[in-house]
Image (cartoon, rainbow, N blue to C red):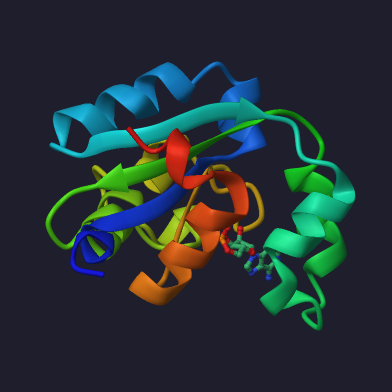
Length: 141
Ligand code: CMP
């Protein structure tokens, strides 16, 4: 689907929401010319977080990750921009905030590898799957 290739999925994670930083992050998203096609505040259950991060089920940090992601509300988003997957990953910065470049969201708002403020899809295929996990087609404006 041609349109889908310009979409990615993002999460403003519980640490950033708890810290009251989601407004700042949304502003950065808008300033970087992403079109917000869908957005909602949700509080995932442990099971919903486990389903979302299913690819990481065998990783040693799976328990820590899903406990954290279900610990408080987060903001889930479908973002549109040309080359959205890479553009959003560039804006987020490296997974580990300590290794993220200056000016990236994880550098500015992330606290640790586990609590790194934001999530983004790693491919167009996963963006479609991840958007579909949280949004119906009707919710994309
Ligand atoms: P995210 O982009 O949401 O995708 C999977 C997440 O797992 C990742 O961001 C990190 O926050 C988290 N993660 C990766 N490696 C570790 C680790 N070694 N310990 C804890 N969390 C991790």
